[in-house]
Image 1 (cartoon, helix red, strand yellow):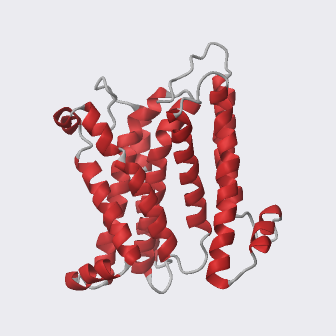
Image 2: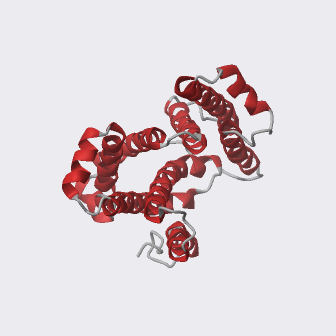
Image 3: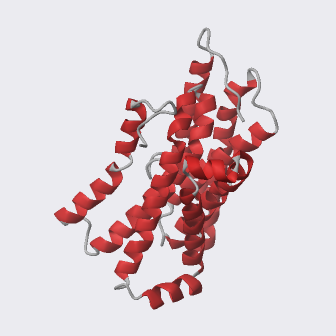
Length: 281
């Protein structure tokens, strides 16, 4: 059962996470039933399921850094559960797309082949399918730990493809795709720093904050580049919008706030008396 810990005991933590993973789907279903999803409710449900799939992919990628930064080993117990939930929302996304096309599977297949952003999203779904199928303890034993870990590193590719798919299918307002792209940059940057062995000693507490600046800067530049190539907006004006609140908080602000909050929580946690630091690998 997904709510049991490695020793087979009931885990309130895992049960809570398990229940929370259903909340987005239930909320979408309730809004669909109440008729508050606009003139094209099925299309809106389709998009929201896809968006939640990407959010959950990134959340699953955040488990390992969160475990180390927050010195919270138990967090690793829910990584597999979150990854399978990401696959479930992505599969629902494809199923709803087929429903939106009146289940004309020939048309669905041709659209996936002919439209690049759909092909990219479909490849991401295939990767998630392989990861979900091999997520059981039995498959870990069958594949062996090393091969299983190597296979599940494809999560990084799935995350990248999902973000690119989201970017390409968004018509104009790319605030959320930019935000998710910036968070993905932080997650991959953390892994690159860990791989190089720089997360040792006191540096382990401050690298996440430095990466927050890098991810936020990359997000701001990416947003400016997008609007420059899309509608010819002056990059300096888009970049300047990050320093005011006239247009609300920009994606770079969200990325910096989220990543810095995690980094500061990690500093407080890891400087607690008597706390033994965790390995970043």
